[in-house]
Length: 216
Image 1 (cartoon, rainbow, N blue to C red):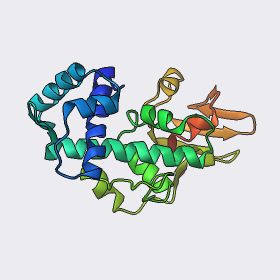
Image 2 (cartoon, rainbow, N blue to C red):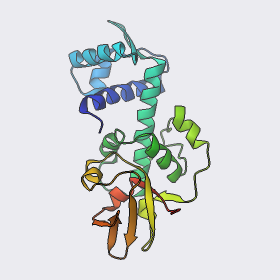
Image 3 (tube, rainbow, N blue to C red):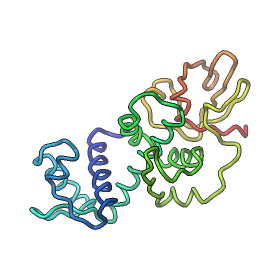
Image 4 (tube, helix red, strand yellow):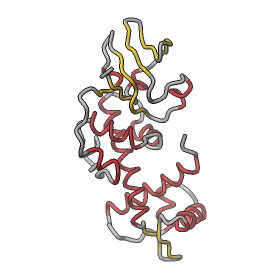
């Protein structure tokens, strides 16, 4: 499970990526960054200094902060996962606050789920608001160039009598509490669902965060 402090770092890098989208290579004042994030200037400066020590940003006091190549890749990845999550929520459909929910989901999406979501959603290029979804990078980009097995699908697409092994899923306390993990056998029956033979109660929202392989 991603820790809360890691989530704070992710939010800063994602926000800096937003500034990069509008002005590539532009320095961002810590005061401007603080206002965008809704934190105090002192808090923003402290976090920026921490990110600088970790190699994510280049920080010059009184001038501003700029993402390094390492930080840019991380911020791009978080923004990509956020916008993929928003597309997924639109497809469900979802009646809650899509942006706020996507902010939570992005931290739970790992490489496996990012690949599965991209394929399941049909490789979307924009989010529901028309903003571009950043391209995949690194290993995820390489995996997306391979053919998606036709035996894989969203768990919510299982019909009664079908079953499949879970190959990707969100990092979720709800799923973990049910003892659900990659590799488990998910069965769809007339009366509901079972995981490794044990009946479980799964909402449509949880089902849409899992991908199964029905090849047997």
